[in-house]
Image (cartoon, rainbow, N blue to C red; front, side, top):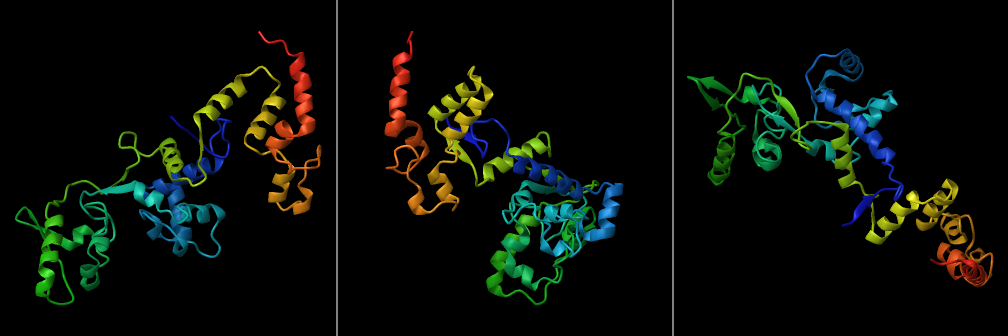
Length: 290
């Protein structure tokens, strides 16, 4: 089994960037609810009422003088749509769910599934409740179009009608659901775990690396030694090849400081260098093996 580690590979520390994003997501989640809270009144006064209950925030919601907190909140997904895909709508009365633009039947919005019909609809911005009515205890849709349907559109229109036919309004408010965990709902922990799965800076350790790192931190050596070995195993020490990658040295400045013959990599400097090999040989001669 492989262990998934991030930039702190082998150290057992969570990625702080993902932690910060998870905490910001908590504010985004709270913005979806219709609960009246004082801080929401401040947000509405500053950024407009349309940001409450909105699944996706973006550049259009960031005024020129927006705070850094609000900018980070609007750019939370950074183009990946992970938050938008993690929330869904449980429709009650249908008075706060867009008929065309939100996902309330199936796995995509009706606008995405039937773009042709959205283009000829006269109700592109209506909520579900405004697209029909109760007549004699039965819900009937009242969809309005810019023109009459062509014959070749009938089959696709029948598909649309079949998909929305089961809807019946309930005497409860529409409610957002966190799809990442159907048991607890939204939590910072489940959000962090979800971000781990989509993060592109993930590093996978081989079983042998997991074995070494586990025993490294359990060893009795001084903490400074353990920290240095951890950096060495991850090739994070300032050898000349790493300094060259950082553009701090020229190509002709990469030779080993000890033997001055080969490129100074971590493996060479601490194991394969002729000068270092002699040191290891002498040390090994003084070891007493059990």
